Length: 608
Image (tube, rainbow, N blue to C red; front, side, top):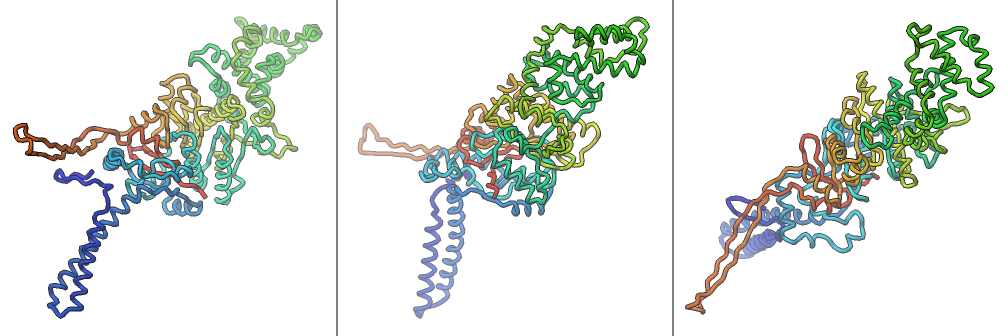
């Protein structure tokens, strides 16, 4: 609606200017014809011909603008781009992120959308043949409300973390392809966690590295293809041994932060970690599972022997007879534990005790039945991460006969590589969730290192599809504090309720949403998700034209009629982008709220 001194113009009216232009043109031609064929004064015909030509041009230009405006509403062609074209865009301005094509959505566009929906012309803007093409379904007229141009934003907005929401088939994978390809071409490290294991997304990433001239930097991990998969150790990176226990405890299903089973499991894990380090063995998931489920007897014995060898020379001779008798009964460990306690306890201990080993000894002496009950939630988690081929994939050991790559998150980031991590959730969603969760916990530890030691030479791009399947406390921390380590997270989900279901509470889900400064909403049909997106936008004043017709007769003079016609413009508050329109967006189309409050209506391309 256009208001100028209470005037009104319907934007999608027929092109009346075209008729006017044709009339002026015909008049100009007629005048010119008479001028050239008749012996009449030329001055009037020159004036009439010139005026007709000028008005024909003016009205013609207005007619073309009106025709293009209406034609844009019917445009259903998909946007396509090649990697070479994308590379040219990045080369022209390397400090921007390209988000397809579109325009800034403002109050005037909300008004235009209001008029289209109110006028009833929406149903006439699509044809039945459009329904057979997945890229032509939906309300394309929304994008046709304005001329589109390249949507570019400062690269720094990615540090604010990004949430992409959209229903199945709406274009989340295509959006990832656009963003991932740009990160690869910028030469930044890229880590993609894909629960479904989308082959097309994987190949897009592989081709992007080949196009950039670095195919060797592509790392592929997939539990369904162990022979082709790289091997990733999620416990490789740590500064304090306690981090490893925290990393695993974070992925155990719990009933809250004060869950006593989680606390006990953390202690059991930490005790084993300390014991392994005491004998100079690097902890991994397989070794932790071995000692947690099978018992710590052998680990306690080996760790105490190493400690006593260093701090109590001749200890073995002192208890040789006791060890000999105990060995016959299979109880050597208990003798060593007793001797260790004798030497390290009391008012004046002979040797200074090891606090790390004290915890391990405590686990050994703990009632076995009670111990097993308290770690009942830990053992299934460790079993999931070490069963079958996963044991070798997530707890790799160097083998000269095995040519598969052994890597870790720090190595991937420092080498500016790209890791595609498929989780195979369709085959086993529980195990895939555990794999994704522990890898996200590992990334959080890497982010902490980069933050603590000031390592911020390059941005790290992390993309997580179906993020609700792998989200946990470390992931929330990474969303909240990852910016300090230059971590740029882009997470995707179908509905916001997925986060609440995974985390067990609405406040926790809101915490995830609150830590993302950029929101990209593709088509979504979930009412709660639509409402949340609408809440992130301002309200605007929408104008409505009301018409009033009245006719009547007089009771005393039935043959006399009177009538009236009036128009009025009323204003009321409305949504900048109504929630219901989110359910009508075509595939690849989106509404975005970017850092700083910028609202964009855009569409992502098909990468060719």
